Length: 255
Image (cartoon, rainbow, N blue to C red; front, side):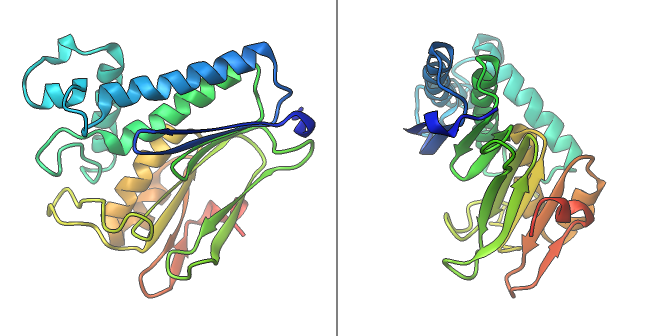
């Protein structure tokens, strides 16, 4: 069970954002080592996948300086996951909408997911790994108490759109324009996707939850029907006019 008297927290600036580790288990030597390894993992991911670093494997692969066979195994894994996400989303998730190879829409969630697994394998079973606002939750926040995650309202600064209650392992990812502007590209038009104002997706693991949130946001009007077709995922969207929609099962998590 979580031991909040010995709470362990760590903040790491990496991958152009902030990762926060909140560990509610009693810290052990193994957990401290796993946390250090999780942080090293995030920096390795940045070195391999950053599109802002000209020496990264993904940048060199995009420029044709190296082949896929020259890349480390994680590049093969990520590109295979991206290909599958593109297929499942009918092309609404794409790693080439801007004409360059950019798997960033999957990599951050995948990296946080792997960091969470490293902690779990070391005995930290009650944790929250927050990668730039997208979270992988495990276990409980305190004995008998679920994790409670406030989702910011995209149109009313300071207000919450909902509070998500996680009674078991859960991933939460939000895509929108409030924090970073119109940064998600509609892969079919090449133009920034601007509707809805925000979309929050919950699912079992962050890798695909984050990826599907991006795809659903880019899809716009057809997002609700598509999310409802996915097994194990629920969503809340706030539209630009203040209206909202929720998938039928979202009430299990959100207020």
